[in-house]
Image (cartoon, rainbow, N blue to C red):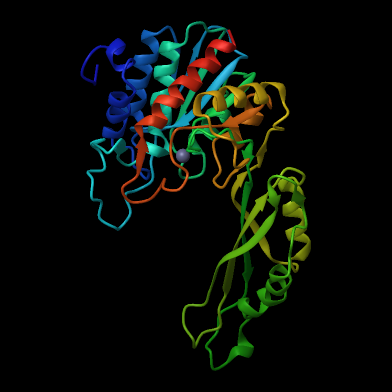
Length: 372
Ligand SMILES: [Zn+2]
């Protein structure tokens, strides 16, 4: 056992368990989630979960845990965190120090507090018709762990998914998708004084660039908003007195329910001149569940009864492992709900409120028990 105390003690104290998870340095890159993953597996095994760890190379793994039959509720979380950033912290980032009801540390909000709440709720639930917990590595770098699990065929089927990302315990219906494309035009280099001897890659990209600047996916979802296109980076040339032989453009498309990434890629392709190569850098589909879905509506009512909050939002601004897990687990309804606060994950002095942690345990335990 890596932690102090017995599994039963660890699973009875949400504050101490969050602190324990924050103490594992799982900054990604490089990740190193395996030790924290093993610790969670030991705790879950102690309360009847069948735990399967999938290795992703040295020091990295993801966990699929199941108690009872598959096909019920599945909780999704990740154990990696983003780096600390350049600004100095006023609180130690891996101690989980509590000040004024806030537990500070990298990953406290995004999303070790949510993961700790899954575990404590699973230990506390009064009955259970079958619960899965999927903890991934490498989420922050583009849902890598979830993708690796899907490719390995290591995922169960689910009747519903709760993603414990930061929402201040508000039930959110989904998030936009992200499709990042790299476009490349090639030329032939020559001395800048004799441009006629070369082929200028910037000039080769220019007509396509002009069309992309005017591109609008023209798809709008009533709750998710509009699909968007942003030209994020452009790189070409090594110096002013050479003809550039390569021009690369990175495009960030954000999708909504109603347009597939294949259709978006085709639309971009149609704007490109012949000879321009397209490479996919990231492909995470949008996630959306109708708030009228019977499971979603009941679960949202459970959450509201605990928090007393009226829903303010329906969509998260970030993407989650659900982009991979929803299709891989059989397209069940998805709710994004977690104790972290939406305005400061990834920031300096990240924290989670103890009051939100306690609420999340109560909500998750009620969801497990009501499925029983
Ligand atoms: Zn996260």
